[in-house]
Length: 381
Image (cartoon, rainbow, N blue to C red; front, side, top):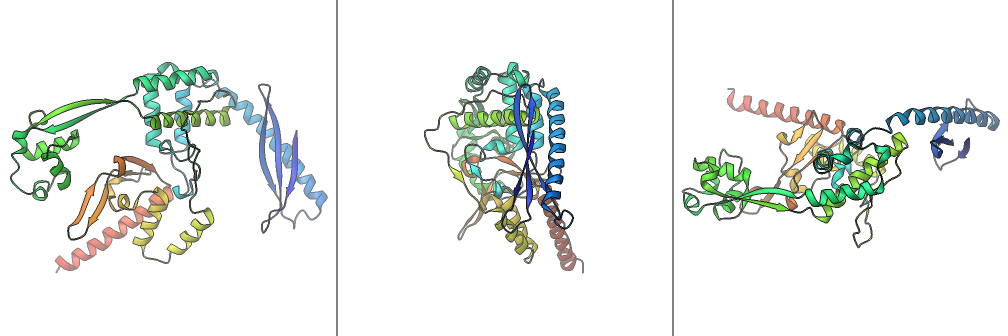
């Protein structure tokens, strides 16, 4: 059956809320829509009710047809449905500042496609039996088993390098001069030559500077670190999002992953609201394009100020609509500036809206045009 209800919101046109109950596999599923009308065309209440009722029956028939057609996807494996889910959330057409709600459900690392792909790959590696299982056949026991498999076999394996004393003694110039022309900061070089454990990438750059191989100049250490409870929670949140997506699209999921206990109440995340974002977007158009770029970047990526200052054009993937955040720019009084790692070394890729990327491409062209003009004025004469 389908029902209609007249809604008259304040300062907005009236409309009819449509509620349709459809049946699928013996289950009743409720679907919602709305019927908006032109009061100049439908002048009387009787005409409006008749038109809304006809729209409600049409909506119910279409919803029932779509639900029955979606059953064909109920036999898809978890891996395929997860790929569909990741593709469906690739780029949100709104600033990340509008992501708000329950922290445990909405604000998690799985909100980025790169991390979702990583979670899925790990599940494929440690539990191939699960990812190939039909989405409609997944049970609560399966959910518990796959998370246990991730805990046991999903440890983080990494390599660290410590420079040998005889090669550390080869330093013969300042760190700033040493790293010139290499993908390495003076601060990181100082840590390395001081005997601190560094990443393999840093060790490779230092080896290039010294003109020797990594294996000769460094002692390589391999470490296995178990996944933190917070990371396990991210896997649970990602898997639940896939199951919710399948339930909405294929109406066939009953199981759900149980979230690990945190011991604290969920936090509510609140940001500037949609009307405030619209006012800000309308206002910044009056300011120089550089200031527009700063504000739009903060809105669309949610990065910290130092991370924004550390972004370079190589971090922008205009084709995939992603921004790579892997460094911060710190400014020191009487010293200058220094690139360093992000807070908690949070190297990540952020999905952004295509509209934002189009603006940044325009901003990049504007900067290149100004640079070329200045060069021609200075050196063209």
